[in-house]
Image 1: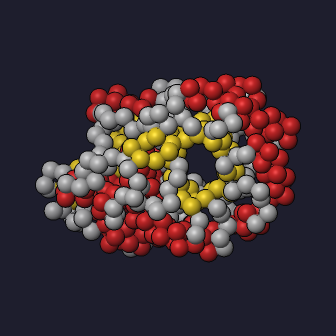
Image 2: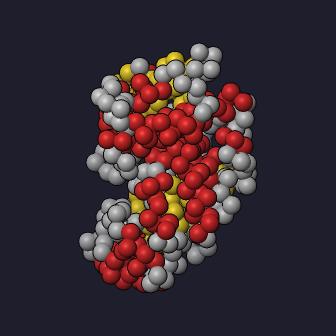
Image 3: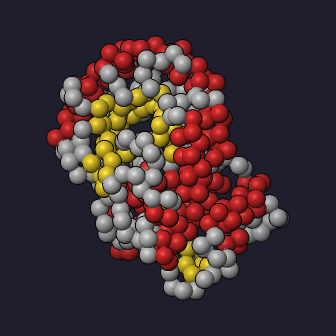
Length: 373
C-alpha cells in the first residue's frame, strides 16, 4: 500500500468572532492510498500556516513540505514517517506549527491504519482502559460572576457534572477574578466539579495568591495561570499551590513537553492530539505516567480531534476527565456524521475502525475556503 495523495482543506464558519476559540475554522489533512483507503486528520493551529507547511516544495534536505515527503510511502509505517517528517522539516522549527502540521498527518495515518486493519485506534495503541470518561463542558467565562453562574447552570442542566470556565475577562482585576470563580461554583453547585482556565495571565506570585483565593471554591485545577514557556515558574507554583496546576495545551510534540515532565512542573498534563499526533502523545503518556502525574486531553476544535482524544485518553491508566468543547459552533457539532459529545455527563469511547467518525462531505463542501493536493 502506498500514499498517492495528500489533500489539505481549510474550512471556516461564516461568523468568526474575536474570541479565544479554535472551533471557528479548521485545517483537514486527507491521506489517500492506491488501495482506495483514506485517513483524515486535523491540526489545531492557523489553517493557512499549516497548509503552507504541507504544500511547500523541496527547498533542501531539512526544509521540505510534508506532501513531498509522504507521496509513495507506506502509510502503516507511522513511527518511521513521523521521524522522517521531523528530520526533513528541521528548519521549520522544532516545537511549533511545523509539529502541528505533522500531527494532522499523523492523525490521518493512524485513522488509515485502523481502517486497514479494521480496528479502532485505541486497540492499535495497546488497548483502552476505560469505556467511557467523565466529561467536562469546556466554555468561556461570562462577563461577570452573574453571567458565569448562568452559564454554569445551563451546562449543569444539560447533564454535565463538571464545567471548565476560561480566558477573558480573567486576569487584570483580582476582585473580578474572585467574582467569576464564585459565580462558577454557584452555577455548578456544591457537588459539581469546577475547573478554571486563567489563560496565561499572571506571574508566579500573583498566580499563587489567586490559587489560594480560588481554593475556597474547591476548584479541581487552575489551568495555565502563567505564560506557556515558564517551566520554572510552573515548578515553583506547583510546589506552593493549594490546588492542582494544569497546563500543556500549547505544547507541540515530545520535546516541548520534556522540560515540564523532567522538572515535575505540573499536576495535570493536557495533551492536544491536533498538536502532537498519536505518535508523540503515546510517548508523552508513558513519561507522565512514569512521573506519577495525571493526563487529560485538550480539545477545542471539531469531532475529529474529539474522537482522536478519546482513543488516546482511553489508553491512559489514570484518565479522569475529558475536555468536551460545548461552543455553539457548527464546526464543533456538524463536521462529522456521528455525534462526539457527552450524554448525561459521560462520553463514550468510539469502537469503530480508525477514528470511528465519518466526514460530513456536505458540510465540508459548504464551508471549504481553500484546497490543495
